[in-house]
Image 1 (spheres, rainbow, N blue to C red):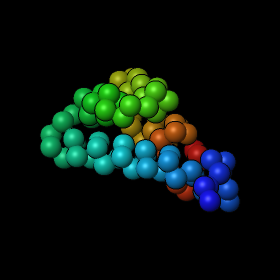
Image 2: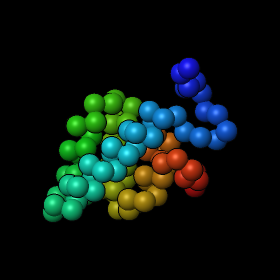
Image 3: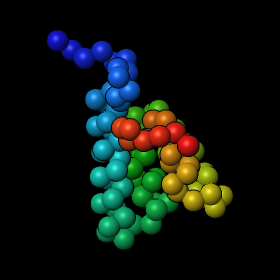
Image 4: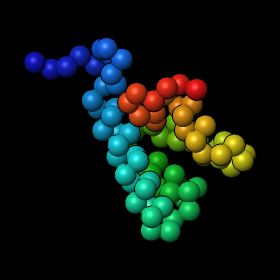
Length: 88
């Protein structure tokens, strides 16, 4: 039986969790190999193949360029918050 795509019991959808995990792993690998944060976000956006998540990353990148930091803009994106992460 397939799981419903609707949120149940406050848990994120399995597909979304996989996409957030892939985003995190890819960005961590790039940063660990000396790629700058802005360049890494651009690369991740191109390799994700998901327009919604890509648009979320554009917002994070724009706010990062404005000097807003990385954590808060990332936490403000519903599509990029991990499971159980509170909205700030």
